[in-house]
Amino acid sequence: MKDKELVKLLQNNGWSLDRIHGSHYILVKGKQTLSVPVHGRDMKKGLETAILKQAGIK
Image 1: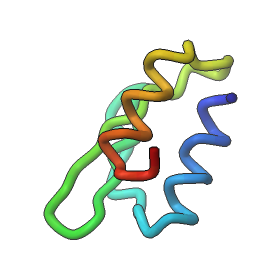
Image 2: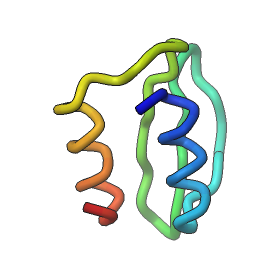
Image 3: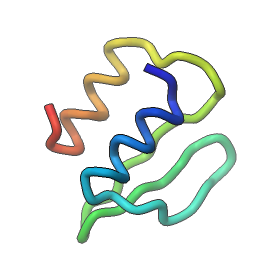
Image 4: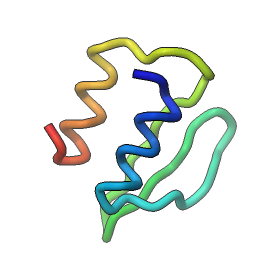
């Protein structure tokens, strides 16, 4: 999955973009914060799974 696709998936599940710090998108939902690296290429499967678990999607 591309990094931008992951950000869009998170936004569709209630996360909102708080700020961009360098190449990392910081998303928030309530009091939770999530950092997603955006480097313009496919994410590794393990990192993708870890982010989705933190977000409560997987």
